[in-house]
Amino acid sequence: MIQIGTFLNVIDNSGARNVATIKILGGYKRRYAYVGDTILISVKNIRSKRRFSSKTKKGEIYKALIVKTKNKSKTFNGDSIQFLENSVVLLNKQNKLVGTRVFGSVSKKLRYTKFLRVVSLSSGIVS
Image (tube, rainbow, N blue to C red; front, side, top):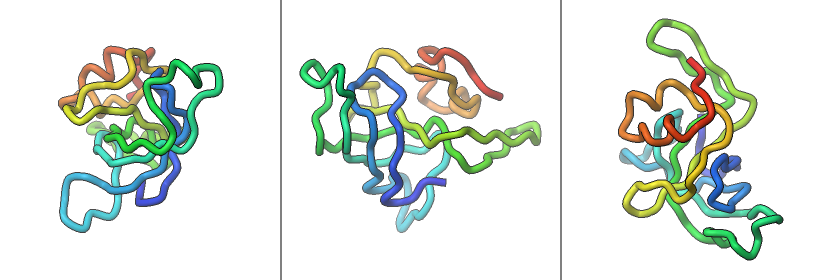
């Protein structure tokens, strides 16, 4: 359950480390976002090793796809999934991935969205 002001980790190689939520896209006065939703974010920190060759800069605004949440989410078969952190993957204006790799596993819910590429680039899928 992500809301405005929530800090999230970035799990791709776009260069950003931490981001903050500015707006939740996809509805009028929408308050919360879950796995598979898109949000508008601002970059707060970038990775120190890739500081000069980073694709992102501090303070830039991007779209992002939520791939992990700390809050439990139910699956289609009745199981519930909970991750240890809130994580996103950065997108550009055309909803294409900014990075070329996704680190760690992602939720199986993303298989049924239009962002199937995120699932194929990740190292694993959690049911």
